[in-house]
Length: 330
Image (cartoon, rainbow, N blue to C red; front, side, top):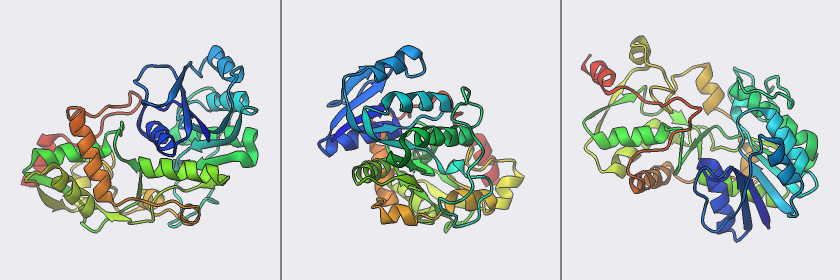
């Protein structure tokens, strides 16, 4: 199999490149060359946001069985990319997001849930959900039933450049009394980037098409299991101090951003952590234990000196240590 990965140097894109190589595929990346590539993958340098970059793809003498795309900005870029590759690629895998569903969604909603209004011709990026939904339309308009739309939710694992799991790991490594939000049995729905990559490529190879909620079953892990795994992986002496959601919210602390991954009960929780994944399971999606994801992410963090990369278009996440201490003291 011949695989083209658009980007392919960070987080999910990198995981797709590494999975393609692991499968023995012929892997090529197309990007601007701003980050080190993955050893073993051929590299094409170009900027898909420019006419010259799109022309380079359209006029390439190469052909591929699968192209994988994780683009998160203006849908028009995906529209032009898909058009340029229509005759050179058999199947298009677009990594979208469960954020494309209109908020709120009913608990247990599947891929038939209503998607936000969007346009594949939008040349701007001002809303993540609409950008992803517009890109989905751009791909399916060109590739039809040759398109696979992956809709993951919370993505974790090595090379994460959002900062959610890295923040908890670094906090655990600090030790001491550690604020644990809500209740220990709060369930989370997630996918390791490597499992997402493995499923996406296998599904493309099997000619799976359409939209699929590619994520674990609801409550595949609990918050206590995640935080305990962080303490064990780092070998710290941290002790979990469970603080009720009401006290956290009353203190003005923001779920998800100041306390990454955590959401209190309610519509947001049901929308992000209670998604039907029947199609993903039926098409071979499997999720490794949260302990393995946490352990491998910590090993990666240590290998790069403990400072996780941060996407420039995303604000840093995490709770100020003084605010945590004040809340615990109260």
